[in-house]
Image (tube, rainbow, N blue to C red; front, side):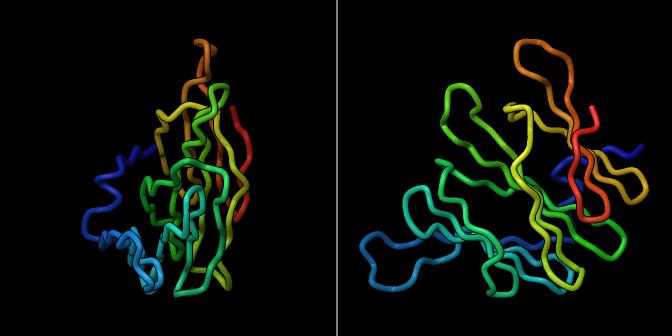
Length: 157
């Protein structure tokens, strides 16, 4: 089983540009992140407080209107597809962090539902064509894991 760190997955395959939207500007919001995943351009734009839009090739694919901050964790290559992992920091005391996957490279982008054990200590592994995200469970309850394959995320541990 191969273990990939965010840095290892990003080097050489992903170019990132950061922008800051000007306060009080009448111009449309500038992207906070632009990333090239193969032939696809991923853009993350803060529309307003607690409102982040993620687009693929300038087409919105999902909006986060609940989190205090949506962050790009990393991009991972699985055969002819790219998987982008996002972390949503909710600010909630009972569950401060959730994750979401965006898959590009197929006929249309696929977005997972939010998942995770509420921990921000995620570790990504790739084995064959399967991506697994593991993290500790709260209160020392061991480890939890979610597996992404064939466009679906499911709890595996």
